[in-house]
Image (tube, rainbow, N blue to C red):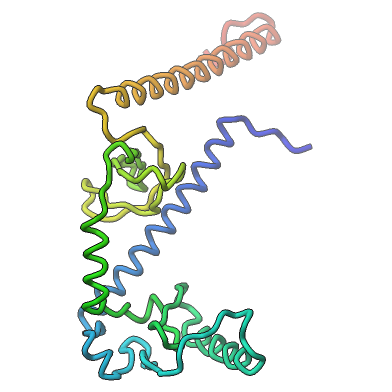
Amino acid sequence: MARMMSDEQREQRALLRARRAAEAAEAEDRRTEERRQQWLRDGTYMSRAEIEAGEPCRGCGQPLLDGLGGWPPLLKLTPEQRAEYDRADAAFRERHAGCRAGRWSMSGHRTAHCFYCCPMPPLSDRQAEQVTQILSSARVRTEDLDAWDLTLTCDHVVRLTQHRDNGDRCGTAVNDCPACGMRRGVVTARRVGPAGDEDGHVTRDRLTAELAAERAKLGKQQDAVKATERRIATLTRKLGGQDDPSA
């Protein structure tokens, strides 16, 4: 008969799984950053002028502008187009079998490129202008932001602010650690409350929650001590009333 796990054991297992996932995310983030640094050293990044001149991707050697037009939606592909699409997909998977990354392509072109092997192209002047307009018109209200406390793989705790529209989940798997001077995986993320806390309500609520958690932890420890004391007393009685057989 399988032994039931205690709440503490389940919490420990969940925390262990979370730490393993955070360490994996940290390793993957480091892997992609090392590739970006390699692109810089090797001159893999391309200018917009080079791309528009028809030069192939320096990451994989495939064309960036193939002139074939974009793929129609998969459900609207003709049998011939579907066969061509499947061949292109199989070729891409063979070229990038161990990359563990997604794919991208230039708008209006079909050749797929790998996020791990092929640097994304720079924005065109028009695209850059559109992004600037969007960002300049965006207004983020402090009251729409939440503060989160992130525990990282290095056990340091950092504060993250994110928009409330992201919901009840932290929007990042890795985060910069000022103490370590590097990016670390996020083991646990706890939403503290609204980022704006002029009256100190959020701080008081956080401290109250932490105090309650520590009291609950102390209560469990005290219960464990009492259970151990009862067990010692029982064993002592069974040994004929001796005080302590180990003394």
